[in-house]
Amino acid sequence: MNVDIIILAAGQGKRMQSNLPKVLQPLGNKPLLQHVIDTCSQINKSKLHIVVGGHNKLIQSSVKAPRSTNWVLQRKQLGTGHAVKQTLPNLRPNSCVIVLYGDGPLVRVKTLKKLISRTSRDNLSLLTFEASNPKGLGRIIRKTNSKVVGIVEEKDASASERKITEVNSGIMATSSKNLKGWLPKLKNNNAAKEYYLTDVVSRCHNENKRITAINLGNSEELLGANDAQELQNLERIYQKEMAKSFIEKGVKFADVNRVDFRGEIVIGKNVFIDINVVLQGNVLLGNDCIISAGAVIKDSILNKKVKVEPYSVIENSQIGDNSSIGPFAHVGPGTELEQGVEVGNFVEIKRSKIGKKTKAKHLAYIGDGALEAEINIGAGTIFVNYDGKNKNKTKVGSNAFIGSNSSLVAPLIIGKNSMIGAGSVITKNVSANKLALGRSKQRNIKKR
Image (cartoon, rainbow, N blue to C red; front, side, top):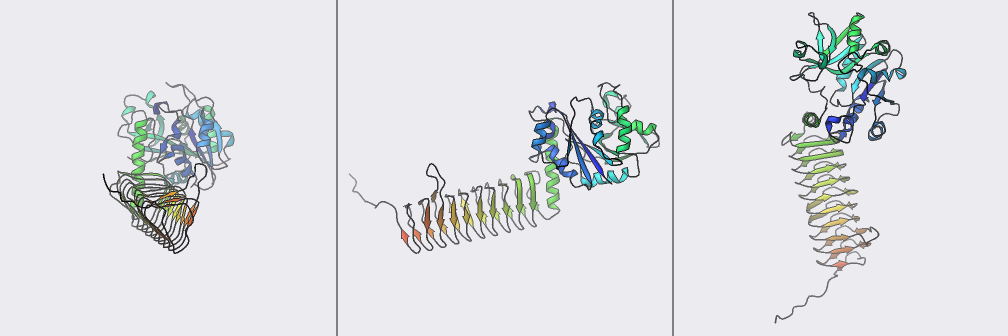
């Protein structure tokens, strides 16, 4: 069955007190709307119709949607029914149509698939939930036999109707044929003078067609965000859901309430993550990694048994098996560490490739370096890679020893098994198996 998915994303979100439209507010460092799009992409034979308003260009440029997506402009915001009506010319004949909301990022694929399966035998299917505080939400009206007969918005609800706790999520599914019959007949004779999509429920009932309401109970899955506080609540729910999904795969957390997932995160088995860790962008953590408190890992791959000590930052890098980083280290963009590399306290690395079992354990800067295996980088070593105009490379051969407080002025080649004396400033290439000293001679002068 073809599935047309309509995502309503035209709301301005004034209560967010933000320059961004509501659907672009971030959840886990990704726009709310992007979460909904990503969920929809998992439904077979689906086509997206995204209804946008005044921020249409900004929204389209801020999310990644399938090429086949139909972007629909709602020039005047006259209600949800009016918004869906704009998509009618593009709906496929006899398709199942799902209506979603761009600020509802937590809805699951399996829930939408259940909704689709019900629509194949029912004329209209709704997703509802039980709200402890239903203020502002549309109430589900049922007859004494529990049959759904309509939805009433709070502005139009009577005192008894406002006591109802089963509320409308806004998500519904029906056939394109039904929508094309119902939407042109909607009226705006209500307190807000808007065309409510929810009025199709009573139309369906009046035509003696079947209505099914799938009540998800006290589920947080259907929650949206209308203001900053509700967005913060969504963030906490999202983070806990992410942590729960990783726990089921064998990941261990010091505290699931103090870790942030901000992107597409993949974590292997038997990984331990301490408090206040941030994983951002595309991150892969291999089996048996240990990520200590306060670490920030962005757009990086950590292979098996990597240990990241407290308050270290890794970004746009690849870390080999059995390597250790930190504490207080910064492995910067474009860095690749092979197996067993040790990067210690207050060491910064950028745009460098470092071979197996090489060590830089204390207070060093390695920029634009190509280091082979089993090199020792002494404390205070600086790769002087910038001449004021260009970034230059330094190559260091395997088993070299770089003494403490050395400056290696690039471009430079340090040969295999060579040794650089402590405190040297090296400006010329050093051949293999050589000792290089580049410091002034010590003078001991008698005190006056």
